[in-house]
Image (cartoon, rainbow, N blue to C red):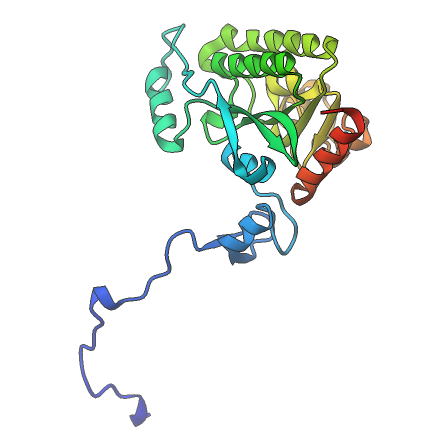
Length: 282
């Protein structure tokens, strides 16, 4: 083993000469754990190249995928949550909001915008789970309501992309009121004959599921999305029975008649375009 003996001691590489992999270059799939280039994941509409798993993305990515050339005009971008109840849990609510804003670069858990999708005028309201779990507070409800009003006024089809843990407990009743407000606004949109498509993504739960997420003219979902109102444990304890395997998956919900179809994210823009061309004259 003499060939293995190091003749020069204390060989070291200066820090500035060390090669390190840049952050964000690689991505590990959240389902199959395979590793791929982050650029390849993005080019594949943020779905795994190996198993097709749909990674969670936010409004920035959906707007890039759906609006032509990523061009859009944002609606009501400066609305921020107030603190109507002076709520404090482990920290004051205003502090929690500021921390979420600093972490995500968002004002609240939904962004609304309009632009063209394959030449068709479209209004999109997209929820961001990264902002306090996509919880629905008064700002989320107000921005969705204003987006519905804008779509009705301009007669542009509306797409709402839901991803939420439900109502925002820090606003209590003010949060629950948004369920009724957005549902009433959607009724007016229906009376005006303007189409509304609801896209449910992983996860869509709580008060969002119980309001605008399930009120579309077409309710569609991404593969394997978690869709439900209460969690499995709460339901199991309430009914006293074991639940079917995967009973809150998009596939199970589709089988039981609560969805119209499931669409792969890579085909989402083309599928939405084909659907709107069938039901709507731009």
